[in-house]
Amino acid sequence: MIIVIADDITGAAEIAGIALKHGIETVLTTETSFPDEEPEALIIATDTRSGNAADADKWVRRIAEIIPDKGQNIIFKKTDSVLRGHIVTELNAVMEVRNIDSALLLPQNPSKGRIIRGGRYYIGDTPLDLTDFNRDPEFPATSSYVKDLLKGNVETVGVKEQLKNGKKGTIFIADAESRGDITSQIDKADRNTLLAGGADLFTALLEHKYGKELSDTDNGGISIPESAIIICGSTQSKNICEEPFIQTIGAQEEVMPYDVFRGEAAPDYWFARMSATYGRTKSIIISVGEKENGGKDCAVRLRKVMSDATCRLVKEEQPELIIIEGGATAYAIISNIGWKSFKLKREYAPGIVSMTYGKTEIILKPGSYPWGNLFKL
Image (cartoon, rainbow, N blue to C red; front, side, top):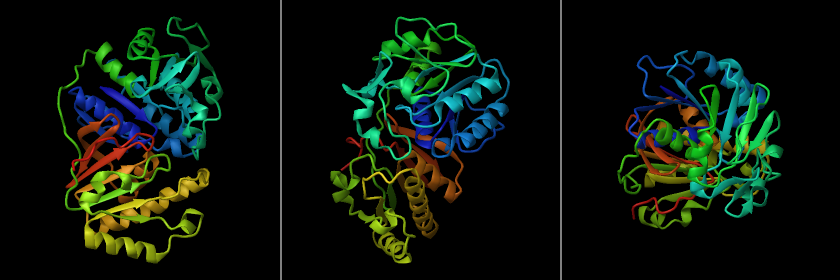
């Protein structure tokens, strides 16, 4: 069994979509327990990126401790592709609990223009700290040098370098500018090396190490059914209302009032207005609206507001489709509603994955990924 521990739910869904495309029976869960019937791949979604380091350590240790101690089990630690989160803390927790010597970390996704060259992170040709990620409310990229972003026992590894004989618990973060570079780095890891990183690494692991072939399927675009709730919880992406398909479905946007964004309690009239819009149109978009960085406390508060609003609407009438942008927002909403385990349905695009709970299809999209041409007009 392949066991993936992810620090947010959109990252977990992204990995689950990759497994699904490679013909692997996959279950995604937010529970810290193992199913009686083990699937080929179990993707465990936590929300540790949104909490503090101490809580992240506790949760990841708990999961690592209950993983069945079978020789054929593979543990993969999913991390954010641009190094947000408590990455060193969580890798140390897995290595200590499972008695693993070292970790090989490849967070970058060359397929999306995200690379590490000479120990420095770039998006395209732009150093990470000169991109919009320097305005992230919780983990701003203050440097493009990966050793500055990851504090701890971290060593950089060039494509042509071998892993050094460091002390136990060393985290090697590797250069890679292409899919071939990622494959070359994987070959350096032995059975006592924890593999950690992003979607391109997981894809290469399945195909290069375990011979899993990619399914040649065309899932088409997303079609909007009669009832849909779209939650735009990210301040990093383009406004979905600017997408052409919105004009065709008649969805109405309800923007969070500015005073709520700035810290006031969400007023009853806003919830009532959303309820009336949803009851009338059956298709509603709830968005943060503002793009400014209010800091971590603001981000946590906004997630709760968006979660409360969505939960109220779902209780009024469970929709056929929920689209949630932003991993922490998605986790807050799903937890608030009380949904825990999901059947994977399809991957619409890399990182944009759908799963089902009862009659509802849930599509999760990382906030930093573009919508692209996903929707059927």
